[in-house]
Image (cartoon, rainbow, N blue to C red; front, side):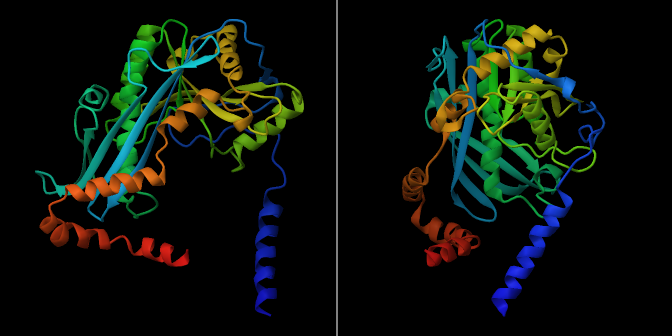
Amino acid sequence: MKTTEKFSALRNCIRFIQNHKKDFKEEESALTIEDGEKAFVISDDRIFKIPEVKDYRKLGFVDGGTEPIIKGSDFNISICRVAGIILDSEKLNAPEKLPPIIEFYSATISEKNGNGEIIFRTSLFPKESSYSNYLPQEDILIPLKDPSIRMQGKFLMPIENHGGIAMRFTEWTYAKHFILNELGKGDIFIRDGSLQTGYPKEIRLANEVYSAGINKNVYITGLSKSCRLLNQSGDSLNFQINLIGNSKFPKDPWYYYPIKKITRVDNQADLFFVKFNKDSPYSFRFDIYIEQSNNLSKQEREIIISNITNNSNDPTFLGYPYGLIKVDQLARISKKEVESYKIQLLIEFDKDIFNKFILPRLRSVDAHDILNKIRK
């Protein structure tokens, strides 16, 4: 009886989704939520076939990875890694003037500032002294009440996520040096993810990247593996455009433009949707820095997209740029590595301080880990 009830509830759940997500309106546009966003009506005359690349440009890719090593409710230590790679003449190469990988530890604590407010302070510690040139030069300070670190409603973001913030900040600082030292006029910089910023002072770092791109005439772009944008009716924007694009160009790669222009301080992007390989089931959100995109001709726009398309034929992830696959592999931190770092880190603690002050803090959040081990 219980089994029947369980499957009945599951069946009703499935029907609920099916009944509400079977179709979409033809006359739609992207949902705008804040000022500084302009959306355009979705129509098939905005879908364009991506031409074959004829004008080759150098592509630069940057991505980061991070994992917490130890964490309590009021402190965290993470290992972070940021990597860059260059595609030139269809060959992937390491940067010539920058280290291809930089590694650092991030340590986050909660404390009171001079005004009596609780803040999260994150300090960065490079594994090699030369890496410090590519890290943010100041501690990252975020007030506990800052909305950027609220997950949902009044729930606070886990403190270990501040390692990810440190990684994001470093992606921007490394990217600035990457653009200034490794790329030139007409080249294309691609970061993993959108151009949106989300934390205090991250905007300043992003603007430094944009300034570097303007000064060097390097195009600043971002490619998102996932997209949660909605249209005005609350349906998936990516889903609707994907259907239109595949219907109009079923045997070709395509791009959709314009869809939405964003000119907010924290997000300065001209949005595209792109399907880089005709045999791929995926299309992606693709951002170009708005100041650059507004001045692009259709020809130059298609040169950017066709160069990335030419790098999106690897069978490991068909339709996704291989440069981003490779830089993700370089930046990724494995669980095995984390265990090794953890052993090294714990050895460095003063034994008495660790037992009296650190271990009890670790126990405040590790009960879930114990349950996971029991399940295994």
